[in-house]
Image 1 (cartoon, rainbow, N blue to C red):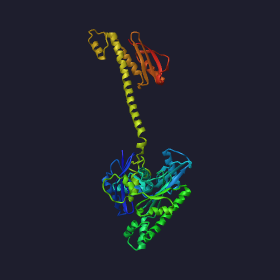
Image 2: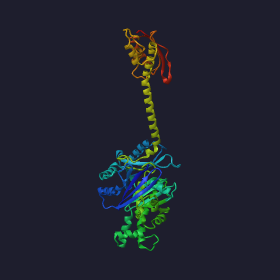
Image 3: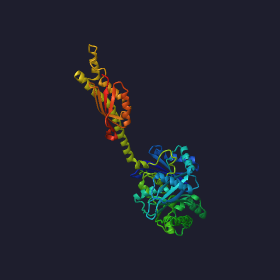
Image 4: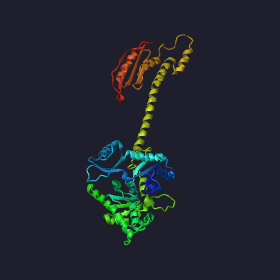
Length: 521
């Protein structure tokens, strides 16, 4: 079964959505749409999103709307614990308590998610990467979408969501990564998202307030041209144009961003012993020609672009689209979440109206199915046992009636036939005793406990001619036997009840016998 994820990325200039079909076997992109953003009003943004997703049956039960959340609005922390492993429920409480001590939020105000990083031989204990935000902020986001008639099933930090997409692109051989840490730098219009991943797991995330707009404004001012013209020149200038003045402006402005990135890398190297092996660039502002070469030369780490070909190879849409797919990587990373059965870093999971974490279907399907089958089998067995016990007394009565009627009439008769024989007699004397074995059996049955399973009769013999009753049975509790004896002694036809030796019976039951003298003839 596949889930349809609609990834929503609300950027500064436009809103992008990517629709992906996600299952445990494969992830493929169905469609991608971009619309210019013309307002900062939440209601108008939601209306635009709703219009964009109306064609994808977004209210269906197997469709999840996942909204990107800017990483500069969350707190991300790499936590270390001295223990090796804990249950998820126990680790939830520990992470929440730790976040409360380091964040300017009370425990009841924190909405968080985390994942456990791969264990290395050099580290004793457990490393956990977590991200948190105030509950009020998430609730406001959910309310905005609900007011626009859009149910949000997940709120995903944009920069941290690249793990699933990296894994998919590596499987398609569009990216080549090792087990060592790599950086993904998403250069947007006004902000740059920097995330560090190792084995597709986030280690670090931060947002730098610097983006492509800064370069465009610098070009517009230095060259005395309007903003739109500067934006066009920025994308067509190539790094090999050494004498081009626009290149000098671009390199100068990007140097500011590169210096901030280098500072971050140095801190990671010292504090977390994190040494990067590769940088991947993405985002709309990465369309500046030669930007990967500039980063590689300036930072000293191999740098490459995440090309549009990666998304094209995941594209299952049949229409001819010519739009630049570079801008869709944030939305695609959001939409590809859940391919491993878990919706990672969902900041809305505590408040969402529709459960989008479907990992239990993958992890618990087999044990839940087995449990359900066992319950059904137990119910069937219990019903059969109850039916058997309910009919057991009736069978004993029928057997005794057959024996008694054979002795008196020479053949086995039913209760109706016995009564008919009695009515056809011309004399007033009854052909059967005043008290029959059947009557005695009814009295014995009446004395038994209401719980018919507490005493199980194994053998019963009623000898009217010799005024005796012998019975052998099993009892769960010997107190039930004593109580039944008292009831029998108070009845009209029984006296001198003698109990035989009590021994161990089957299934922890007591094996006992009675010898009873009858007074009724």
